[in-house]
Image (cartoon, rainbow, N blue to C red; front, top):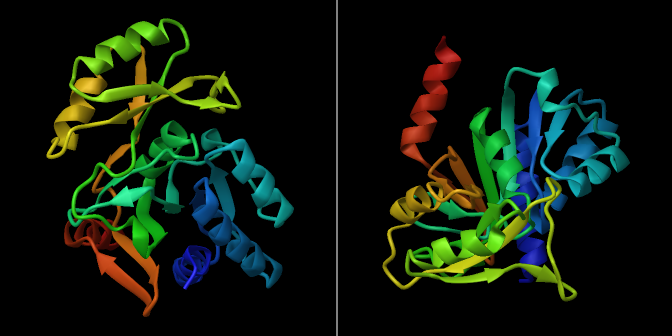
Length: 237
């Protein structure tokens, strides 16, 4: 079964968690596209919700599917954030940012009552490291920032597109880092964020309440017991 089909299956399953009147957080990338499309189909059927988006591309998609888009300043919280991942381990720690929206994605996820990551089965890994860790940095002094990041022991590459440095929607650069095996990503994340010029990393520390995986045998959901319990407590107050 094709990966795109698996992504679409996961997106359809995630849409079952959308409720009328919600404020949604919409991610960025090929997997998020399928969810935005599914949410658009729900809007066409009369569901009322609004969305905070994590990129210009996702904003264009949402508006194309007639989903009302608001700025972060227009809401105090997000009911449900749904996005894809580049890889995720058994402890629900994920690497995101292949689409370049990691900083906005982390801001949105941090304000969400519930976070669901959706994916095809290839994104499940025993240990993080197959996908480079994106690090969003200021363009000013980015070479110095990269040199400092290298001293942590990883390989650092400035992300380029068509021979030119890539720029995020925030106007920043991205360093893609590859670490040696058995690197503790929590430690690496903490050390990276201490470097002047580093704005955020693509390491998401078990923030999701569940993951939804499309695979050859259908869709399966895996709950993060710590986050699901927290969500249940939030709803009880």
